[in-house]
Length: 526
Image 1 (cartoon, rainbow, N blue to C red):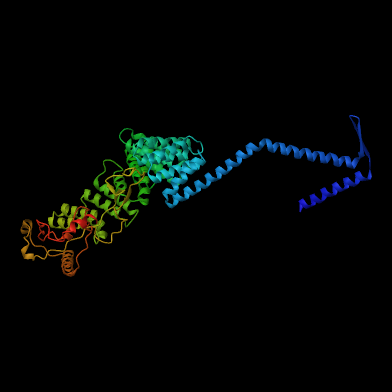
Image 2 (cartoon, one colour; image 1 turned 180 degrees about the vertical axis):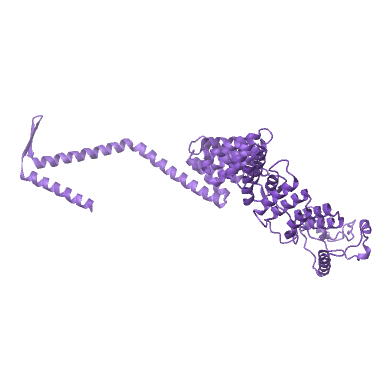
């Protein structure tokens, strides 16, 4: 609307100007080189306007002629760039579709049409990687590192190629260059951090973690820093206890549920006489994550305490989380040390219906220490062999007796306190169990040790086990043959069992059979 109003106002002003000039006529006279030209003012104004338009047209034509070579060159360059862009698009689509032939062809075309273009270099590198040409891929990535806009992409490509050929030194250098160029780059910072952790350079790992702080979530950063501080505290446990205590306390502040940090901080504070502060740290960690290391550190808060005092202290800790298996096991161990077998039995009583290995083993220790009953000890040890597993420090399929900051695969904070392989759902036994023997019990010789023992009344567990064995024997007789776990595969040069090797081989005839005399001649032309 505003533009329409402005247009109407402009037209009105021009019309008013023309009317004003027309109402005030005048003459214009020009005398030049003996010529005299006289005309009216209106005609002179139109003549000047026409001369200006003609001059502008002539200048435009002259400028077009002068710039025609540049315009022609720009046209061809633009056309070449369009073709290169289309080649890059086709190549990237072909890589995504897995068409190696079109990808390599498009990469060559893009390199010819758009040499040095970042996308053309990327297409060349990816097509070379797809074809397995590592040297061509590295050349393309090195060309990227020479440009400011693709330097980080080239460094990442060289880092990946170095990892593929197991060149740890080159991979580390590429990651360090990328992290130095852009500290917030996540993959570069993580690679440098993993390398420092693998070398147990905890101070360098903490520095690398601080550089990549902006690329991490706050909770993730705090957890990783707590793990690194704990690792450093454990490494300095014997060399510098003061620094070790300071690192452990900082780790506890960042991650109160980190068991190794809380246990180490509790031990270091107990050494310096700060039992109250140590007790608070251990109690807070116990409420979040009950663990045997925390219970052991809490039991030994004061050096020189008697076994009875340690038992009372552990009972106080276990009462803070009633119904926890770890608390019951800690009380049982402390009660065994104190010689109070009644408390030890009472602590494990709720878990005897389905005991774990530790519970069954502790019951065997109680039976041996209290009564010396070898039969009961063997019974509980047998149940321990069949019982479910207990939590342990587990990472990447490996079980460790103690916590470690880095897993076998190089993951920081990879170890977890859990039952090994608990997350794997096994629907059938890994190893097929052979059916029980059909030999009569009278044919099986009894062990020599049993002859010395007095007969004991059968326990309900033994009766149920015998009934289960008989049921398994009856079902095994009716069961179908078990399918082989590993199928039989014939080797290329092995005839296999299907050729009937048990039969006598057929001897070859010593003389060729009598046949058509033209048979050999016909065979030559087959």
